[in-house]
Image (cartoon, rainbow, N blue to C red; front, side):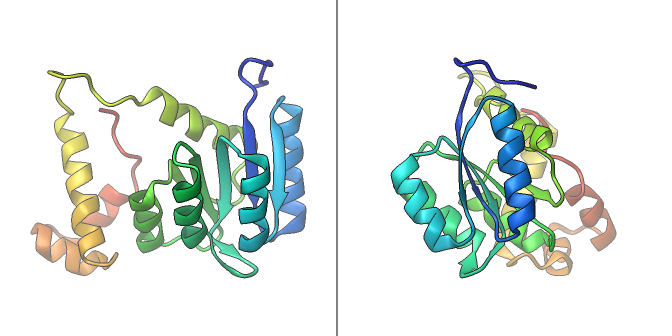
Length: 181
């Protein structure tokens, strides 16, 4: 999955694991992308201002703060920025929060460069339905579940009660990828 000059993107990689960050940045560069690296929230903010990335890959836990907080700051400063949040400590609540704030996807480590780029490509391919084209029933259900879960602060048991379904059924639905429109 190499990028030609027309498809090359500017990618910010913010991760406090030096080896993982360096390996991921190298993989993006090998695919023809321009990459800036950061090990902390403060460094990521400086790099974003200097580098002006189109895409960002953010670790959930950075040396000086949360990748979810950083996500909000970056999206405010760079409104068109596409972000993927990575974590080795995945939880439904943080995934819901990241997506609610505008993350393209939420992936568990160790995600590789191709998996991350696919998440960005999926975002680019998922245009909103045109007028008159309705979202699928599965998509509407998925979005409703996400809203209820966010309203319940990520508490799966409480969300299941509100939705009137069994907790395990809700967990099974949450474990699947969002349906296409």
